[in-house]
Length: 364
Image (cartoon, rainbow, N blue to C red; front, side):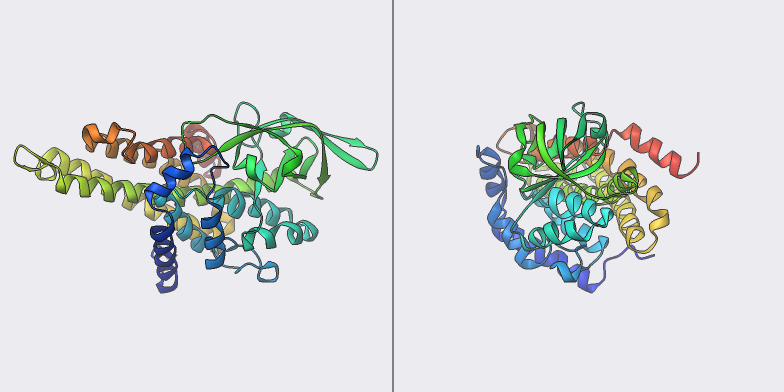
């Protein structure tokens, strides 16, 4: 097992970091966040595609690079650190993983080349109106209309849903693919202003069924890979909060000396560092497991969310507090990481549900 990045993976991280430094500074994130448009920086999405990171798990024959989960997590950690407003989690992770898990060549040839090239985006509708991951099958019904299928119902909290070219929907009759323009979208008001979500409303919407022997198994496989990917994004946010907080403690002077020289602040920063180190080990273990030991992935993926979700939120909350009054202002970025950490902690289920998954994986 390898818990350290090799030279090639390190160079990948440096390349993505440099791209984001040039094209996704905090001011750009705020511009996209404040825009009434789609909430996506399409130019940045195109540049990421040109760098070759939007199809890391996509087969070479379909325009991807056929890399691994470790490489994808390297990219996600950098995107999480920058709060990059791109549909990477929705398209390059969730949708790509659904297509690969379904194993339908026709669907893969239709969707994956466009995603890998940055020409198209896709979203996944798997949550019911109450926000429960994987429960859309209880709220979205598929019925035959002659030789066609139609969907009726609602799915909530679809990441980047309102801008997706294609939507993969989990229903009571398995998996379907729908034209994103045929779906009625309602923007979801969430805590995190840097990641748009929407409610998908289907009212007799035309859809194409994707052949699948075990739709539930596909959903579980996608959750496991998404849990690892989201953990990488959470780790990136943790690292950025740690760096920003230490920098602040170094330059913020109070009573004639930097606040970082005070024991309470020193200990708090040390705790943040220790939490990041532990989280990083858990993440790279899970990413390595996804690539090399799939049979152990249920445990590793659940552990990733059990550890990373609460750790990322606690880190963001502590960073906010250590910034003092400035950290609570709209002009400072600390609150953005706080809000992203909280919504990410609940995106794939609650902490209690993640702990239950881990207990099941360990046969406890």
